[in-house]
Length: 164
Image: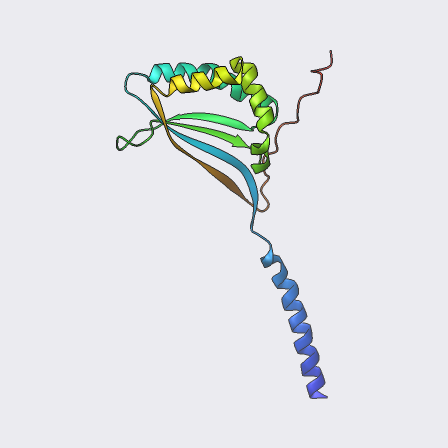
């Protein structure tokens, strides 16, 4: 009799223990937005040239990508280099997720619209290389703690423009 009570107690204890342990198997975070961080070194005397580009075609393209729901946001940062190989400008572009990076055709269409054509965009990028160097880039993903909301991308625009 004592053995059956002990066995039943052990069985109930194990069952409760596994029920309590189950939530610990869940990830404590959700995968959030993905940010492309670009590290740029602008040559001495050309910062205003580069900032004009960033405030012109770059900004127009990023705003169009944002309006299309491809990106969530973008930022331009000035950085203080510690040595000659460090960036002095850091650009960030935040996507809702990794899948948004696969929308190359949509991104190319927006680039062509802003720049006139992809060939023109490539030529302009090549010309910018005379006064700036792309040191590198890195993709990072935000890890959002469970219970915190992940920012949602804006809804796509209506296919034929806004209703009038």
